Length: 74
Image 1 (tube, rainbow, N blue to C red):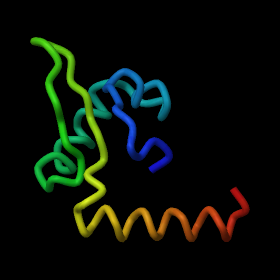
Image 2 (cartoon, rainbow, N blue to C red):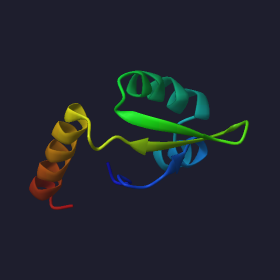
Image 3 (tube, rainbow, N blue to C red):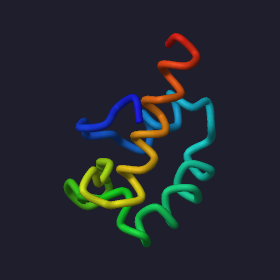
């Protein structure tokens, strides 16, 4: 949610979350299958990811995230 509207890469997500690439890839799969995250392949091996802000579930999550930030003072 912090990086909505930005292009993200597997390695950047892994670094930002402190998770291994394999863990990030495993979590991304259901998000991709449900069209919450959109994947774009760059070349043969590089994959980029963006949050699908048009998806209803994403909109609900963004609203919740924004409300929590206000409550927690972040």
